Amino acid sequence: MNADNAHPALLVDPAQRIFKVARRNFVDHEIYEAEKEKIFDRTWLYLGHSSELPKPGDYITRAVAGRSILFTRDAKGRLRALMNTCPHRGAQVCRERKGNAKSFQCFYHGWVFSADGKLRGQPGEESYPEDFKSRETSNMRAVPRYESYRDFNFVSFDPNIVPLEQYLGNAKEYLDVICDQTDAGMSIVAGSQEYSIRANWKLLTENSIDGYHAMTTHASYFDILMNTTDNLSTGTMGGFGYDLGNGHAVLEYGAPWGRPVAQWIPGWGEAGKSEIDRQYDKLLERFGKERADRIALMNRNLFIFPNLVINDIMALTVRTYFPMAPDYMVINAWALAPNDETAWARKYRLNNFLEFLGPGGFATPDDAEALEHCQRGFRNSKEALWNDISKGMGKDKPSYNDELQMRAFWTQWNRQMFPTPIPSIKGVAA
Amino acid sequence: MQSVSRSDVEDFLFTEADLLDQWRLPEWLTLFTDDAKYEVPCTDLPPDASPDSSLFYIADDRVRLGERVKRLMKRTAHAEFPHSKTSRIVGNVRINGRTDDEMEVSCVFQTLRTKDGTTDLYFGKSNYRLTNSGDGLRIREKRCLLGSEGLRPHGRISIVL
Image (cartoon, rainbow over all chains, first blue to last red; front, top):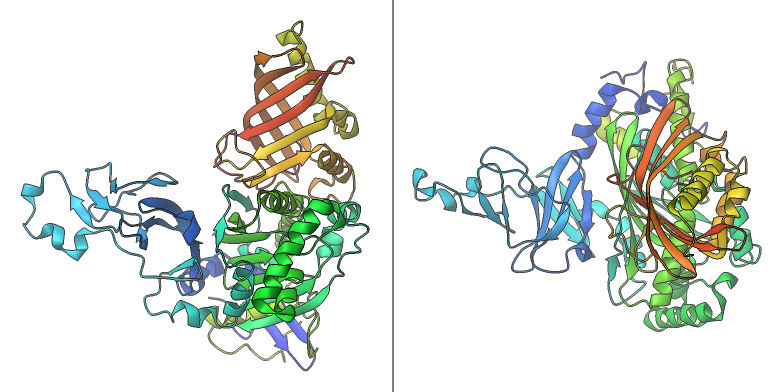
């Protein structure tokens, strides 16, 4: 592949505060193919949340890195991630999106599997050897690696990958802060936003942890927010970006919007105030003021390499995305909410979610437009070669609206794609 | 509402579609009552799901619908600047029920949207609750049930369906 001293993927010089990303990384077919093997086959990838399968027999089919996965809760209540393909001749065994079933029958030749993937029976059993059903190769294959952390379930197609908790590393603490909003557990709310953007998937990674674009890309959203928050008097924008290692990154910052747990805004009225106070008091009791304030009043855009975003902002959203081509990605997004919140809080949470987030909101469509216009701009990538993500380089503590988070992502991406050191900037025209 | 015929309803829905195609959104907004709702559920939800307990794509009350219109008329609504071109077809109009005050109407819609060399199709069924204002029909509720699996490949609902 063409990343060498003459064509580096990144151009980095801390002394001169230069960090550039080759625009070729967003358009090149060879890079897209290499990402499948070097990124998506070698990382932990989000599959789903345990709350999506509350009862034994519940199942979901989901696409992860091009594979078809059958995610089930077996008869004993254990979660299983199976490759959704018949061990006989390969047909997808389950063709429904979700449901509850005691067993799964491949419709092609009628093989029947239990929710743990074990072969239960097949037509014409007498024509197979006696021990056929007890052979491991007769069962649906489990995903090579499957582990979960605090109800977030991940799979990996790399049998030798480090354990999930080790992979999450410093990101674990931020997941804890988010999950600690309640001691009653969290659930995915019914309804999944399934959309797409005609742009390279890495543009959405950047956008999801980009505090710099908000005031311009989302100017029209902030106009609306002015009307519901008493001229943005509630909280001021401010905070920091952090490189969490392993390609993970986070922004943690204050913001003027209302937070269901737990920052009140005037638009929520007195009924809302007593509910938000109740939420806050519970946090205070459980954690003391410092951590309660962090959980309740700070916002987090948490990025887990390579394609999971958990935004703890005016609502809680879980978002994952996969490339289908260099210039097209598919995105799934869900709302996550505490199990013990009141009907009032659930309603206002979802109301808040839709105002900003999602393909019908007042912000996400403008993000999609920005990403698609970057992709269009990259048509000039043979002449205009580089993106600049140097904002805040050299600072002791980069701001939430600097670009440290993106540098964290790209550094890990480059490490996996091109294990040789980033070439020296000398002799390369920036 | 007893005297309103299906062709009266059709005229009204065709006018609504035309106002949207012409981007006359402030005028379009006057077709809604003060307590109106405009909703688009996610496509994996049942058609009668509630936005109070399920995640939708759009769940506007009249206030937010007003904000939506104001936003879409600004240059800073980047997804729709310059404005896309749209063409809406409304058909299979049926009156499914009526009381003195209100009628339930359903139709199918197909909306084509073109911008920057890409054309997308939005299609599905719309359920309306209409009322009579004395000055013609008004919309109390408009719920658009997308017929597609998710929002692919268009990826967004930046126009009004």
